[in-house]
Length: 322
Image (cartoon, rainbow, N blue to C red):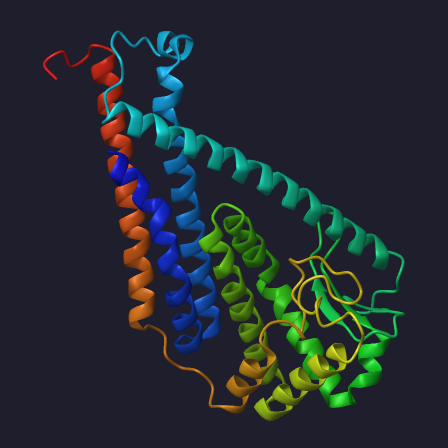
């Protein structure tokens, strides 16, 4: 039982290389969905396994054991090993919960601050220009009472030519239309649950940028133009002191992490992809491997939970022959 519940905590380490392979070989929008779903599924498995692993420790406490109506001690393996793993699982779950709450509160604060910063600006078709000499552009998610907006600084508009601006705006409109902020939110939330999944968040961000790049290229009808716009936007942002660290996340104008920006991600890889033919491959072994990985994690977690449930029933005297 213990081994089955530990497997979902180990399997996420195999997702990062599979995610990198998927982003390279699969159409960006398909890769984005596949990697995000796999990340979320593995994060659920991690939390479920940690919750199941702390049960032996909780049920070893007399008040909890009495509440669960145990008539004999719970037997799921060597006592010291089981209790030791339960203590570690309890600590890991508490740490993950604290990390999630702290990070989520910080991101909500940053999102509200970014929305308040542009709330008073004129809105022309969902586009607002922020008077800031530092080049930046990002798709700002909306809320229940406010639509999403494309935020572009005056510095970014000055850094690009007219046709490049159109490509940039097409890129940001693609982010809003596809609701890429939801994918980024799910990836970051999963990353706060497990360190291996935190590395996959970068691949989700890259896939979102690639999907928006391809949408911009289709809109403009010129892949070279889209590549030039991406490159010049990133170059302009990187020349601004302090913006290199924040490009694609906080942004020079203080955008939240879930607000994707045209200058984010590994720009050289994005430019190379735009200068190459449009991706057409839909399925590669990496996708199948991710599906198998999630299936293994789910099966292992359910199997461990089923054995734990059987052990609890036995401790309650429901299976005296065991």
